[in-house]
Image (cartoon, rainbow, N blue to C red; front, side, top):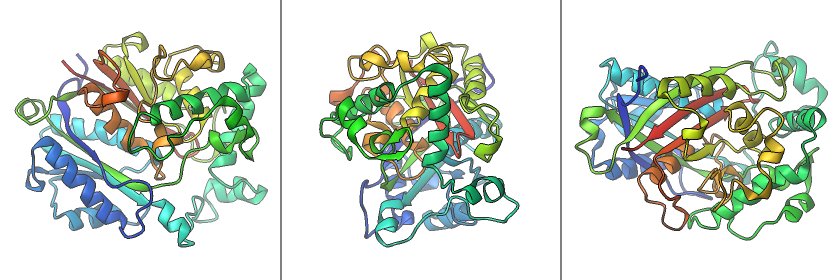
Length: 386
């Protein structure tokens, strides 16, 4: 058994209101998701002594804790982009195992869509002139994030013969899952031809290869093993986890076709004592279709370069042999800027058998993988139920 295997469990999960919430701040959305997750677990805010948060505002975690009325004994605001919340699961399990806290809250929200409609733009490359993006990327017109991921897709196509049709398979599978999710943003039918006919955003990525822009947030509650057994819902055990980051600027990415999921996945599988064949479903960060394809390869579900062929025939869709992003993912369900927390929420619900029409039968294990920045960070969490 690995160092953190079954030392902690997810006992509560929830989203806030999702989609377009012009009358709510990100703090209100976090509070809403937190209250719902506490109710899900049968806990109150007074039970929380570990606090984990990530956001774009300076010292945001202290602001959020103040707003929620939490004075934590252990606090962490590690911020590697969209993978933050998978990192937080590992950190929370470690803190709980070490006795530094007993019950931890992981929370996050953004109002990206409302901000856009108000003319408030997010500048991903803001900072000093010494930062890598400022030196090497921005002067050449490389606005992020779409062209960054397009670079990776172009290289994968050149190196392995991957096609736009194969990438479109991923978007279509996500839409089929979303059609079964009553709170998903995009639920209408989508075909491979529809993806290929959508506007080109940055060659070779079309509009439907790209994630949504949404408001919303989520909360995840993790507690110690002994306490987890006595709470309202079935414990979802943390079996293994791993994290890694390999660069900041896309100009420094060691290989445009290899993400740090290669390393975080190895660590998570080793801790859990499992391999890819032991995983029943995957929740993979889908900021873009290429992001999913790269993770499938780097996590060992298919050989490097075989991702395009692996996803053909709607293998990732409902009734496929490799269910991926069962809520609809960032491509069709929701994407608020950092999607990693929603991967954990969906996995926990699937493992507890709560997903109604989109429920995958017989699920005992799930792998969540977050990707952050310019394909720069990866956090892998393997979850399971008894």
